[in-house]
Image 1: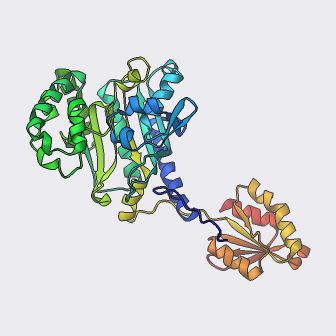
Image 2 (image 1 turned 180 degrees about the horizontal axis):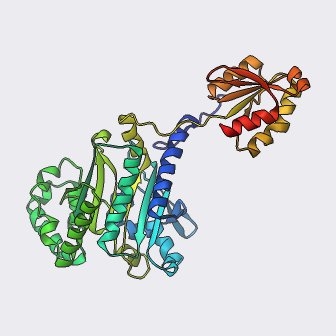
Image 3 (image 1 turned 60 degrees about the vertical axis):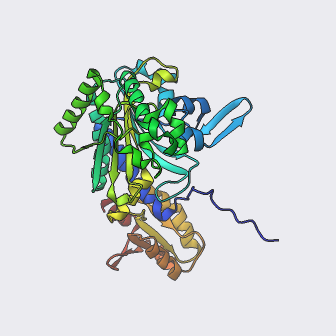
Length: 420
């Protein structure tokens, strides 16, 4: 009987040891940047109530209507989180984080899940990092969030980026704009895609976000949201642009940018890169002053962004950017005989106490095989231990780069490697 062969679920991939150091590097840059901007980490469960995502993200979004991994447990309904903002907002409300005082400047890193068709840079399990400023309605906060996002990409070395910005107004502005869009699209209704026809009544702005070829001929001449902004939204948008200019951040205005989630108000932005091909979005975000009240909290302004780590790595690959270095041991103890192996096991903690990473071969291979293993693992030094060395109390310390060797005591080895 043939043994079963198990593989990952479609659209979900393993991150293998040869790739893990790249993830460590990206995450270290995100955390370093968060420290510079004084954002604090928040970690939410990967499972959230279905109603939270439906109310927070929007019933008419593709995420809710087509892409959720949903399941039930008794009378409870859950989804694997498809994005990070609604869970952070839920945590803010549930734990009364406003009582901590001031704005809540939060960031997160973690896996998200969407049951969509896998393609380059878009998996069913993917990873995002993001930041949220909760409790500030000032355009300063919008600019600060964008600066945080841009700093990460610049620190890593990504180029060929374009920051697109827009204002999607507030409920008052959008009410007038909704009517204008419906009037514009009405003569073309029968020619719109099925998805856009569904959006026509409840949220025609989402038609502008359509990637369906059937809809494209009708988008170019659609009314602009910028012509329907009230005075408050116009002023907010102008200040965001002014602050970005003060920060030296280039941007391109795009009045067709509406973002894919229903909770956005006023500022919307997206970061794209030509190094990603047709699916060019690295990340994006905006202001969502309605979300926290929608999920049961007090009316609270907020702004944030989310970016895909897989997409960032694709851009880095296109630019041939190195993402950190693979982990390598400081020293590999090469053992000749059982006594030597026991000696290595006994003294390995002494290396660790000095902060020296120390590797011992675990399968009882020959010295020649151990030296090959030390090379394969890019060990900086090898300590060769045999019966003669044990009797003398001195061991061969081999520099794996220069091949130079010397006979020294364990204390000298620890002293030398600690100084490296």
